[in-house]
Length: 366
Image 1 (cartoon, one colour):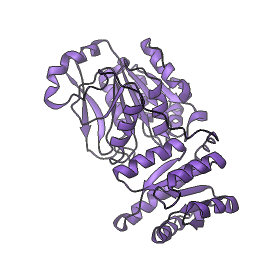
Image 2 (image 1 turned 180 degrees about the horizontal axis):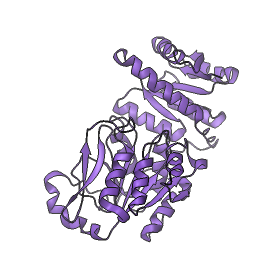
Image 3 (image 1 turned 90 degrees about the vertical axis):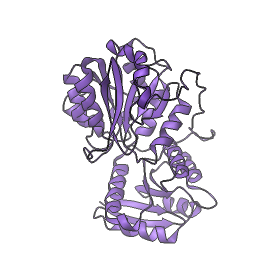
Image 4 (image 1 turned 135 degrees about the horizontal axis):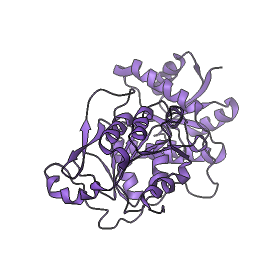
């Protein structure tokens, strides 16, 4: 049976283009299109689509407002269609917090064939994803308020020429451990939940989330506002220090290398691995090679198998490894692949993951 898709966009041109692209896939069909939230609500009730593509910017009721309404009334699997701008990325991150499964840019004429493959893949993934939970009826949203940073956690990142001057701060690496984390579809919320359980004085965390380069700065800034540890988008060359989370930028693989007594972040724009750059496997491979038993690996929700082989290498090198359980994953793909090959030592729900991981350091989760 074909995947039934409802397209919601205020632009007639964009609706026609999306309909053409989606109907070209053999396993899906557009069952309707709507120019606004009112028409979309009626079509959802009448057509019962499997997946909704939703424009972020719409007149009257915006895409975000409509998404929040339907997630209260009748949760549905949604793929947001967004402009890859700072404003668009911030709105899309809010949409993911409200329950959207995934997002994609507006199509461009010069990339239609590649865009069609990507959109079809995201719709297929959304159809397989766990149905979002209904939002509570009387609360504004699930968006968490920002937390106040301490002066220490607000310190700007260290990079470039400052590396050697900061080597003393990394001396803990002689005995300390580092957390390496990877995620994909559903990962923005899973990472947020994990980090909300992590105190400011935590081991260093390096992580990869499959996300375009226009989105990773906003994602890092959002996490930095919400969570107690300092969160930054890695620029390469930062000394890896406690209390700091390093997010791979959307344009480069993230690795680590030794610098004196500690570790320093390193970016590489080499070929994609598992069709991804940044790739979780690249990060985990570096962890296995450099850290051995002083690394802790965590693989969260996501489609595909990126990170599975790298996590296996980490475990074989003596690292403790954790995988998110099926029940709490939006898409049980990456953790499942890692579990099936023996890479996952412990399975935990996302609500328990921070506590289980931090227990390896004798630290209590928040």
